[in-house]
Amino acid sequence: MAGNWKMYKTPAETSAFFEVFRPLVAGAAHCEIVICPPFPDLAAAVESARETRILVGAQNLYWAKEGAFTGEVSGPMIRATGATHVIIGHSERRQYFGETDESVLKKTVAALDAGLTPIVCVGERLEHREAGQTEAVLCEQCSNGIAGLDAAQFAKIVIAYEPVWAIGTGKTATPEIAAEAHAVIRREMRARFGSDAAGSVRILYGGSVKPDNVKSLMAQSEIDGVLVGGASLDPVSFAKIVNFPS
Ligand code: PGA
Image (cartoon, rainbow, N blue to C red; front, side, top):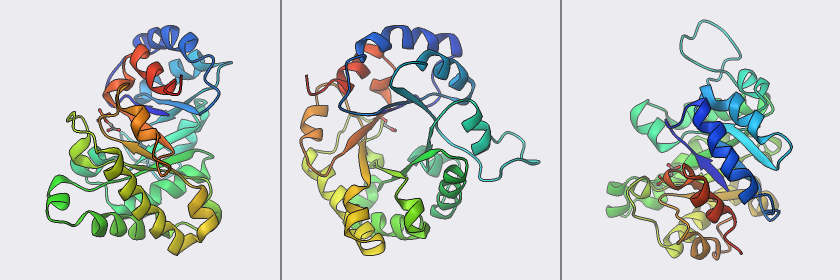
């Protein structure tokens, strides 16, 4: 269960979030919990998550280890904060910051080299879905991006299916629509990496996940977890999502 805070919260607000969140999820042993705050909050999040099962991730990285790349942050730098995960190729990065399947692949390899678990995002836009191109778009994103990994690299990633039309819009994909897309992604992964690897890769659903719809999404066997934006900013609401089985 991963929370993507996007460009919200300061270090002080991060610590305040954890004060409330920690006890609420202390009993959650059924899943991994990852919080992905903005870069300046990573240290505060790691400190607040110490001696808990909560993991911390970044929302982006640059593929070089270091160098003259003003404004960028590398995998080793993120790992050095104590963070363990990184979101890669989120649709907002693809849409507003020019990320492509090729940059997603380079960043995924860089994250793995730095010892981080990449959460690699794919997903179609509304016009794709309306034109019946969802499957083609997902296949293209998978074959230009994730399929460029080798088997050992693939075994270490998490995939997130995030239909762009469902992000921050309040429009959640129905559990059936989400499961269908997950099945397409898994099929593509099976063709590239074989049944065992494709069967065990975790695929998260993201897009307007809330406390009141998480249970029906998680009831789909194809959906292994969720990537939550807006509803992860409030500790009570994200704890309800994490604790969905109870
Ligand atoms: P949302 O965002 O839950 O606010 O729709 C999800 C995401 O962008 O990861």
